[in-house]
Length: 479
View (cartoon, helix red, strand yellow):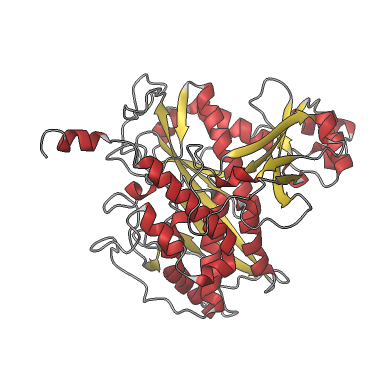
C-alpha cells in the first residue's frame, strides 16, 4: 500500500538525550502524575492549556486556562445541557425519554493525564488534555461519549478480554466556501489545477498537497500521534489516514485529535478539510472503517482463533452479533441526514448486512490474515461519526453476539451490493431502531439512548426547515 512517512523528532526529545531529562517529561504525549504534568509543562514553557472533551457530535468542548491554574487542583465544570444540544446548537423539545436535567447542574471535567500533549498549531506555547466527565459529586455519567465506550470496554475486560481496533479515516480537501448555498469543489494543488477523481492510491495525487501533508505529519508527531499510512482515495482530493491498531479508548482519542489536527493543517494552507460523509454530489462518500479483534488479557492470544489456527466460535458469534445489532445502532455510525447519502448503491459503500472473506462489497469484511491477526472490518461507519460512539456501537454489537451465541449467515462470495438495501434509509428510521431493542440499553445505557435519540430527532426537525435546490428545481414550476 502506498504510504508517505515523515518523522519529525521533537526538540524536547533531543534535549532529553543530551541532558538526561527524565523520560516521564521527555515523551511527547501523556504523563502519569500531576507532578510529572507540572514538570512536563514547565519543560516546554507551556503558558495555556485546553481542557477538552467530546460532545455527542465529537466536537471538542471545554475550557482554556493558564497552566499554573491547571496544576493547582482547580475544579473544572461544564453544564449538563452541553450533551443535549444539536450539531446546529439548538435545544430540542422534550419528547419520549429525552429530558433536560431540571437544574442544568454541573458536570465535572477530570483530566486524563495520559492524553496530555502540545497544540502545535498555536503561536503561543499551548497544551491540551482530554477530560473524562463525572457528576458534581463524582458519580458516573453514562451518556457522555467517552464513558459510553469505556463501559463497553469494561464489559470485555470483565470476561478477561481486551478489544483491539484500527480505524481508517477518509476525508476530503475542498476549496474554501463561505456560502453554504453553493456546492463544494476540490481545491487547487501545487500544479495550480483542481485535482480530479479517479486518483485512488495515486502518489501524484498525494504530492499535489505535499506541504499540507507535511504539516499533518509534523503536527501529529508533536502530539505523539502515530499515522500508519496515508493514501489518496477515489474522490477528488479525498485522502485516507490509517492508524495503528490498539486500545479502543486510545484510538478514539487519536481520531478525535486527528480530525482537529487535519482541519487546522488545511486551514493553514487556505483550504478546508471535511469529514462529512457525503460532501460532493456524484462522488464517493467518506468512511471510517473499523478493524476489530479481541485478545485475552492474560495471554495476548486472539480470541477469534483456536489453538490450531482455525476460526473460533467467538469469531462467528461476533459477526452474528454485528449482523443482528449493527443495523439497530447505525445511527451511531451514520449520525446525520447527510450520512445516508453515502449509504447508497454503486457509490463504494455497503448497503447490506452481509459478511465475507476479503469482500469489500459486504458490510463486514474479514481481511486475509494469519490466525494471530484474524479480525473483522466494519465498513459501515462514516467519517462524520463520533469515534467514541461508533467504536462503542460496533464493539457492543459484536459482544452481544458472543454473549447470546448468535450464528451469522453464510459468508457472501459474490457482490453483495446488488438488490435491496438492508439498512435504515434515513435518520428517523435509524433512531427508532436504536430505541427498539432492550439488549442495546444493557450495553449502551438507556439514558444514553434516550438522550441521543432526542438530539437526533431535533436535528432532523432543523433539517426539515431547509428548502433544498432539488425542491426548487423540480417542484417550483411542476406541481
